[in-house]
Amino acid sequence: MNLLITRHDKIGDFVLTLPTYKVAHEQMKNVKVIALVSKVNYNFAKSIKFIDDVILYDEDIFTLIKNIKEKNIDVSISAFTDTKLALALLLSGVKKRYAPATKIAQIFSNHRVKQRRSQVKKTEAQYNLELLTTFDNNIKPEFNKPLLDYSTEEKIEQLNCFKNQFNIQNEYKYIGFHPGFGGSSDGNLVIDDYIALARCISKEENVKVVFTFGPDDLENKKYIEDHIDFDVILFESKLSLLNFCKLLSNFEVFVSTSTGPMHLAGSVNIKTISFFGDSLFASAKRWATISQTQNQNNYSIPVDYDESLYKKIENRLKEIV
Image (cartoon, rainbow, N blue to C red; front, side, top):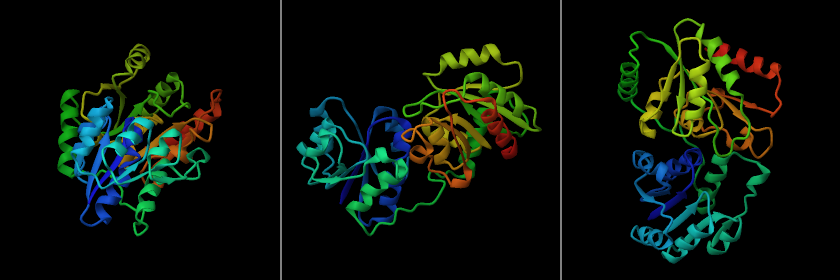
């Protein structure tokens, strides 16, 4: 059987669907697990050992239909759906099409699952797994962590590349910070408080502070460059998502708002300090990482948060390090 699992939006959303791919791959016999993803996740998906094949989501519906039809899909499970995707799955001849019962797109699916995700009774990852268990109720929605597990050699190789790039000679505890905003996040510390956290923890013994930046974070990078007066690494990552995950596997803790890099850190099960909006929809109750609970330190950040919340976060960071 060819099973298609679709999630064609951002990095973090795709990561929260990875447990569904992994559970399907491990528990379903004689099943080829195929992913349909957006361009930003295409090469990453191809590198994941529990995904057997990958379809690139195309904005042109006729190309999309052709790409799906070529894979001879028996069953599709859409962790996120819209009208174009749902119609493409129908017209490509997929017989069983599972999707959340949401919006107009649901009329093109023949197995509609009422989830009401806005009520946030589960995490996003659990909602995604629910679609799979609806298709096959013999499946147990359980998986080992880290979800993305790399060999010691792979991790060390990536760390050595990083150390060579920044001429790092000694061994350190690496503390990562990523202040950029992401899709579902509307709660975050101000950049000055990220700098304050980094300054505070940089005073600890054998610690190396690393700020990470993606292509959309260059304004933040410039601000931090102009306001840093202590030893840090400013890492504008050009790594693939695969190699970024391998690098993160070497970090002691990763501090960030709820965005793609936070979920990548969760996928390799390192400790995280994560910031979320103070609404239920934007909270950790829905958007928590897929790491072990004891590795998660989740904080709801009101727009007008005060010094006491900052100090609480700072003290927790010190405890972890």
